[in-house]
Image 1 (cartoon, rainbow, N blue to C red):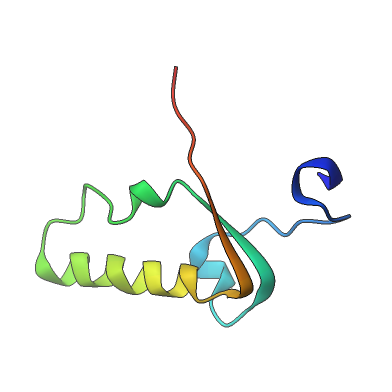
Image 2 (tube, rainbow, N blue to C red):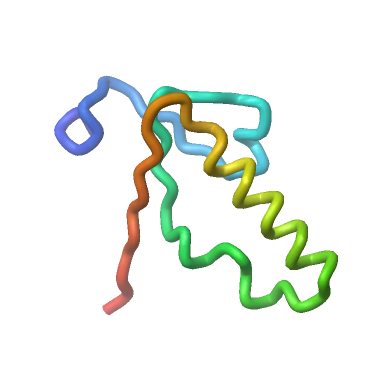
Amino acid sequence: IQKIFGTHGVTLSTIHRAKGLEWNTVWLLNRNLIPSPFAESVASIRQEANLLHVAITRAKLNLKYITTTSN
């Protein structure tokens, strides 16, 4: 973890659980999954936008994206 993230500890969290919290650096895994392809109604798409807002506003200094690929 220290080699990858440059720190001695990492907090792993869902976006929902992170609401109201902040960190200097936030790593967002697979940004391409928001909005969910299952969000079809206007209300659910709006909730997905709210979720993304919460995710990106947890970072005080740095927001970094990690994108994974499936083999």
